[in-house]
Amino acid sequence: MIEVRELRKYYEMGDSVVHALDGVDLDIAAGEFVSITGASGSGKSTMMHLLGCLDRPTSGRYHFKGQAINTFNAKQLARIRSQEIGFVFQTFNLINRTTALDNVTIPLIYARVNNVRKPAAAALERVGLAARASHKPSELSGGERQRVAIARAIVNNPSLILADEPTGNLDTKTGNQIMDIFRQLHADGVTIVLVTHETYVAAQAERIIRMRDGKIVDDRRLDDDSRRKLIEQAA
Image (tube, rainbow, N blue to C red; front, side, top):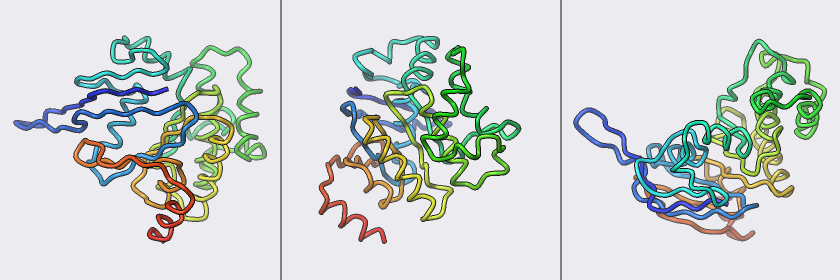
């Protein structure tokens, strides 16, 4: 699904140049559950923004489902974002003045779907929040708001979900409940790329990519034994 070659992203800051990504090669197959981890400034969030077509690389090649994304114009990138990718953020990014159901309808409205309420209600039910559809974000707990954000991310049935620190604002119990939802989505065949600095959260995936200074320094698949050891170390 994802093929990245020699991907670079540089930022000018005064007289210096920051190498946020510095020649990254990466392949992610359809149906994988991948965690990208690393310290602050390692390049993991930059990677997510480029994979999500939210930013353009300085150089390099990015193919998504065989399409040369780095050659796309703004309209083509917007189409990929609306039809193929669901986003989940640490801060939820919900509209406070509207209900949970209305928040979930937003991607459908952008995609010019005619009947938006039925699929939005189905997405809320999928994350166990059908009973809270008429509540506004201010009336929901942090975990419930993140469930709304996940429902919004999956309402268009995207082939890829990108999650940036999805448990970062949640307590451990609620974070575990959110990770249960991601594991179920993965079991349903959705490709998930999750960015996190928490080892425990990263260990929920089947593959961990570790970044440092804009480069991938480790890329490994987890079996049950290695996952258990990582979780024990993080406890």
